[in-house]
Image (cartoon, rainbow, N blue to C red; front, side, top):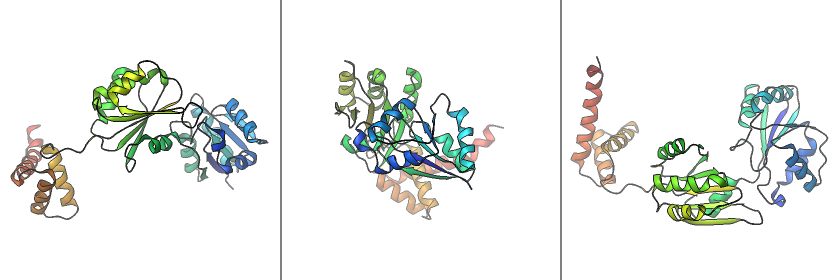
Length: 289
């Protein structure tokens, strides 16, 4: 009979935010895999919990090597509890490999929901939260960071990033360069801790503020790209929208008319774009022979 893998959320700041089930799971686990065993010890002391189970370290440096060992324990019937330094495991923290290994072996995977810096920052940012995407940490090298940001330049959803305090000024400056200095954003620092701060404003202003130096755990929330105005859509986008409507069952004539109305352009422009794309698709292969 296989065991159970439990992913447990831990406080991102205030220990009083620990989920009520966390103490019970810590006491019941056969094995506790912790990103930092010293932080785990401080947490259990604060919660007044005894942990009779075996405690092992499970962090970025040994995640690949230790996953098979933990997977074998799960396959043998152990209840394995995974905790990281703060927040939910697997979210820019160790956990994904172990979850994948457990699923592959048919082991039950469950969670103790808990605090999340991603959702907390979104909630207090003052930016739209109906649709968002999480980008985690950006690359450390400037060129790679710019390339990654350019991939998200047209993203309509609100963007959430993690960043180290000593790189925040460079990251905000790069965001202002790629997204524009007037794009709204919020820098959330030390969430739920004593010196919690949420700084909101245009990216250009936030980059100037961060140049003076910022300390603490950082989450950056950035407004999504604005919807294109009438006449701003490219021919490729017009064609894509027509194709989407055709795939949904609309006749091409009606699809072209609807897309033209949405984009605020003449139907003839959309028709010409569709015909040009069709001709390009037809002639493309022969040109390469």
